Image (cartoon, rainbow, N blue to C red):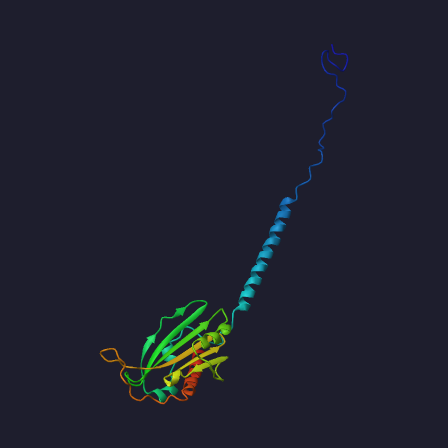
Length: 225
């Protein structure tokens, strides 16, 4: 018979445990996922903003090509009417040079003959458009390296000329990002032994810089249409 709140050989119950529906307070919820999401949004915003800035900067840094176009059929655009009056009738062209057509640089060339084949002249043209870099700082140095020291006004930003000792002429023009080069060479024939044949009297090329400048100016305008 149990008469006391303990069993023989058992453990006494000092207190009575009461079960209720109430629960203890929950541990605080971690805020790390929210902070991670916020940090990711900030980072994405920074990357996106940086991308827009870089895109805008790149767009602003693209040079103004001044209306010069690519690709072009240089032999067709270069009519060279002024030189025809000095060098004689224009002959067949040597065709368009393959050149280069790249996102940063375009370059093409053309060869045209004038007058009789054995005593006429050969005109070489080249058109280069720099789409990214500025050719200005190097233009004059390279022109002087070829012996072009006479400056001609009214042609682009810079124009340098040399008369090739009265045997032809060379003109290089810089107009913004575009470079135009025109060279005139006299044709010579050789005999069976490889010796040059005395050519007939050549045209008077004194003042050849004037028709060269006129034709190059017309070509520059045609390259922008």
